[in-house]
Amino acid sequence: MTDIHDTVPPLDDPSADAASTDITVEFAGEYITVPSGTRFTIGREGDLAIDDNRFLHRHFLSIEQSAGLWWLVNIGSRLAATVTDTEGRVQAQLAPGARLPIVFGVTTVVFSAGPTTYELSVHTAQPAFRETAPESVLEGESTIGAVPLTPSQKLLILALAEPVLRREGTGMSELPSSAAAAQRLGWSITRFNRKLDNVCDKLDRQGVPGLRGGVTSSATNRRVRLVEHAVASRLVVRDDLAMLDDPAAYDRDAADDAPRRKELG
Image (cartoon, rainbow, N blue to C red; front, top):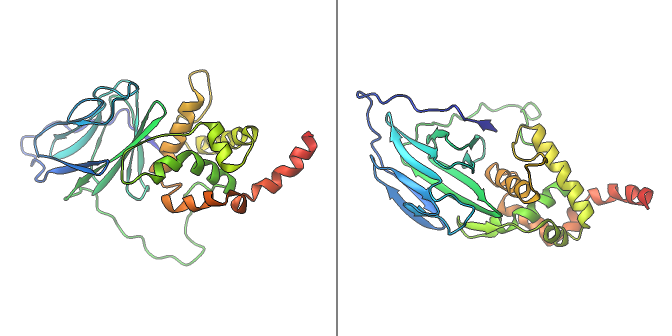
């Protein structure tokens, strides 16, 4: 995860070519074309009115051009957005006041306002980023960069992210409470909260912000930040939801918890 508080676009150069193509914003199955040379705003109001959500800024994000590039700009004062490519290989947190060039063919933007999580995507026909295929390596020699999750940790994230992953296309989803997610898995709330602490600590050590508890953090904020990161980085995907059909079959960690419950009892 990369913080980009100090990222600014280069100064306008009269000799720089303006972006030659329009871009398209997709939200909830609707596609909106943003013509070259215009500014597009996103929020509770604006060119794309996301939702009448009092936690959402009236104007939260803007898409605009500078020095021949399209830029995504956080014009809000409180909320941040997670920006990633479609494969989740590159991820950045766009803090208030920060901006980021739109360089991928498809850029995914995930953000939360209160208990509700939103996702939209920005499409460009002429991306500045060009993917380089990695050289093939012998089995066992590749570097594994994904955060390893135990089966129970993955189940926990799926129980929280289920509304986001099940929705058709992009849109909005209110996340379940810890009690509802624990019931979905057949867990006690004590076990759920302990597992939530574990997975948040693991991701915090990997540099994911917003998951460490404190006086300024609420349980709701931590859950939505966890789901926001997990969905954007593809820690969980829609196909994983099959695990929720029979959580006990995948919950190998339950056996490890049994001796601890016996000791506590």
